[in-house]
Length: 344
Ligand code: UD1
Image 1 (tube, rainbow, N blue to C red):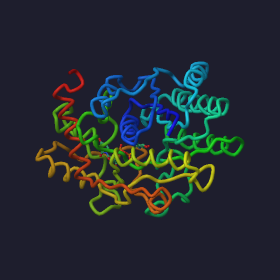
Image 2 (cartoon, rainbow, N blue to C red):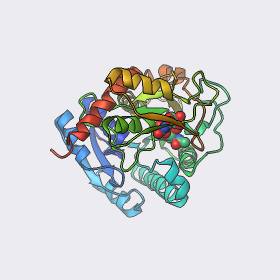
Image 3 (cartoon, protein in one colour):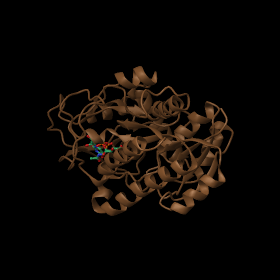
Image 4 (cartoon, rainbow, N blue to C red):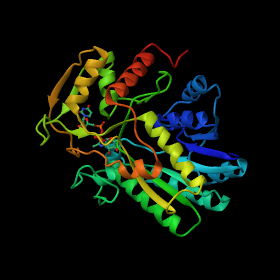
């Protein structure tokens, strides 16, 4: 298909896996990233997998004239997959304005340029965080959006609203993908999550503890109303997630969308507790984890997993990977990082 796909945040965790998936489907693409939370070396790693380093523009999407220059330079853009955003919940509580400014101004600039330059199709990186603690499980796309627990979560909700209202008043079409908990890495072990500083999310915390970068994993609470008392999440493989982005952009490019704005859950439909995740990691890697049960983390949801029927039916997409495989690839990536794979 003639024309390029733009991947904003394409040097990041989900972005880099999506770049690989797009490349494997034969798409021509260009990555935009400001590299504040990622590294350009990931583009070299992508090249090792695909045989081709993606075209790259270092650009902060908050720079409106920079965004316009980008669309002037690349006049054959067909669609945009927008990952670029700040995503640390705790940091967003500490620096709300940084989050509102970065995540919202960048989106507005992108949408303005898409309108101006006649680029119609947008896939947006949203989160199951918009559901809060759902009243019913599994949670489907009709569940109400609950008041956000953090500025980060609020930027996802507001972004969805900005997109929906822009779609209503323009020729832009969009799909918001609400991810559950993305984990794992590419099976090659060449790309994966690169948390800068101390990680926030469970699986990087597990792998960094296992490798010895961190002394101990804390399990945030075992007194929840769940079978083993620890929180339950729907962990989805990052490669499965990447594949869903390809399907979503193709859905619009091929005029297969049912409405100009659509929303899909991306999960497996299965929930695992923190303890089950730890035990599965120990089983598949043979590494014993040093962990302790501590108090609850403020703002944590007790349990959430996706109703995947709508995405399965409409996108013709289904998450394939099981938890043990996801943890194996996450571990392979952590070991490769420790062996200095990015320095070679
Ligand atoms: C978190 C964010 C969510 C965001 C998502 C993105 C919070 C409160 N929520 O979701 O808004 O969309 O990441 O990936 O941060 N856990 C431990 N020990 C740890 C780390 C986590 O026990 O060191 C537990 C947590 O309590 C939780 C589970 O592991 O029960 C998963 O945690 P995490 O990976 O941070 O994801 P979420 O909390 O689901």
